[in-house]
Amino acid sequence: MDKPIVAILYDFDKTLSTTDMQNYSFIPDLGMEPEEFWASTSKFTEEEGVERILSYMYMMIKTAKEKGIKLTKEYLQNCGKKIKYYPGVTKWFERINAYGEEHGVIVEHYLVSSGTKEIIEGCSIFKEFKEAYGCEFYFKDGEPVWPKLAINYTQKTQYLFRIAKGAVDATDDAGVNRKNRNLRIPYRNIIYMGDGMTDIPSMTLVKRNGGTSIALYPEKNIDKVKEIYEDERCNFIGSWRARFCNSMVNSRKLCLWIGARLYILHSKSRNSGIASRNLEFFLTTSWS
Image (cartoon, rainbow, N blue to C red):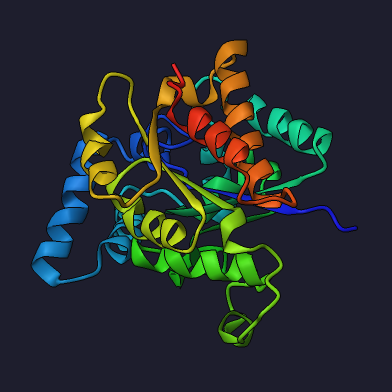
């Protein structure tokens, strides 16, 4: 019998990393503060009516040229090496993969980010993802000249269907639109982790299709996601500190929660009252 597959989808900026990926190296190399760069991006959007993701991609190219920086793929990948993660992130994948294997479940990790794919390719955890989706540049003669792929808030949602159907190539339009009664990964087996407003469409879609959405927030700053939870657009919320930390207590709670989720999804008696109560207990137990 084939092992069940569970897909965990992640946002990147402020979900796995402590801030926007451009803030670590690219923007300092421009001689700018992050607030200054992002303000110029917002101004360009407001004055020209350009979509925000396309705006930041344009401003990366424009400002790099003005500052005499060659925005090559290699340069951007090197920027990824300086990304800082929340405590426990780098160990998380190995731990949860081992936990899944122990219980006869294949755990696959997917990244769906509005950040820069070339920067992500250089980060230390890039190898952990079965597929990583991000905004990409089209390069000609070694430099970016046009957006190859742009992913904004709502465009993230298409990757839920791609992953479920196994049509993971971002250009496979036929595969993602094909009616498929036997999904490679049922929607109920998909877990989405994001940090807030930019993830609302994906969290809502995953939840409505029977999967699980988790809104994550900075420690002691629950107000950022409280409204999302109260509006029933995610299943539940957790703090950044508790989410990936190396504490055995918190690690065990996360594993037990996912284990309970897998049990209720794949047990022969899916309507088991005991399983339902166990799942409810783990979902409502504090992660901290």
